[in-house]
Image (cartoon, rainbow, N blue to C red; front, side, top):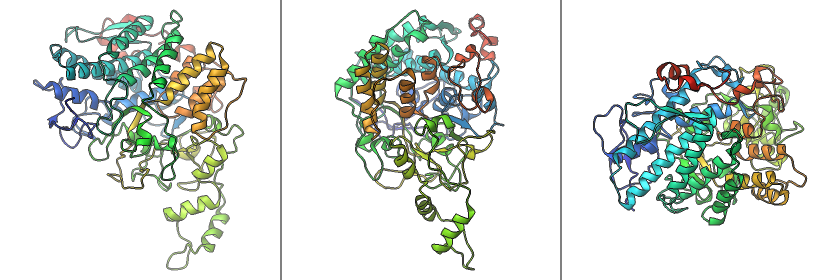
Length: 577
């Protein structure tokens, strides 16, 4: 197969998949601003838009005329899927629309909903342009390339369906100047179902790109998993008209039985198999790669932006924490107590206490003094030792949780944290999430002290087990549901779940396995717990103990700008806005 990945962007930004497609030297382009371009450049742009925000990076020549750092594919979708939920809070409540997003009170004029809507729409323009420009290409290579771009387009339309329950729809057969028309609910679901079925035979065989040569490209495995995810949500996406649970189970089983992917399970360099999925060398470490079906490729030199891995690593750190992996700690995203309680239902997470006497005594005992003999600040190495001495390190949290997935920090670095609070504007108002790391499992150096190398695992194999488990459970087969759930719990060295299980057990396991991976709102919606009063979490509805939110917040509003500028979308505003 012809390789196409060694791509150089304008300026310093390079294609997210720099380890692949390495026999061409081409520049990525923006077809909306470039009068001429090569279709291979456009293919590069199609993939790179998952992990970059413009033509220059990390800022400058942005794709969208808004705050470039806020406009990336992953950051915008993550914010709408995670920030309103029980997983995390954003400390800087003075930022644009943050109180509305974190408190579930947005409107059709909210910029953060518009940024995501614009990003998904812009990317679809790229995909449609590529498909139109290559319509006459019939080689085996182009069969794969076109199917890969069709998958990326389907992925974006899935986000439209999940977040807005509809999309401003166009494909490559529509005139470039034509306004998009709404495709809603069941109709959009059926289009995605048909499209994913159609491209399966056009994509490279399952597992083809699960290696260091081609890591980051789409093959059948990605299509199967997205199809399973789509079908699992069929009832809510179609307003109850379609029940494709058996289809969800079929695709999940195809992935599991293919034997092309495996769960990361073997410890390396002091990191559990699960932790290795979120390290800087997860594109080189076979243990991590065998589980990641589709990553968003990131590189500390060539793919600098504020919307990808940098967002996940920097936003969850504060200066003074150990193992930050970056010299640019934003102190933004911290865990809501409900996330921590998925691992510590009795709130007994090991946490540092405000005890200056204990700190001073330790420093005296260990000669942590300056040249004048006065107590001084800890070095990072000394802080790590002190946390471990006080039994509040991440290692202590993992041990107490009995679950390798409880990747939190509540030690002394950066300040004393709280589990819950009556305010939102301080990073220390919650426990720190350290799931995403700019460190390597082999102990080697990363490429840059600020910009992470960690690839974002956008689709990973573990999802297939939970999809199938949920279908078994909904169909009354608790025995097989538990088998699949416990495959993941065994990987995490957690105690097995036992019968009987409930909806909440399934939903909580989704959270434990996938927290902060950009999907929580979708899962809560499927279980009917995002709106209403069935499940109240801290700051749901903008109050400390949570409150009921109206059902119309189940979906986001069509941005007012699109309502004003597109006559076809005007009658399609979601109810309640």
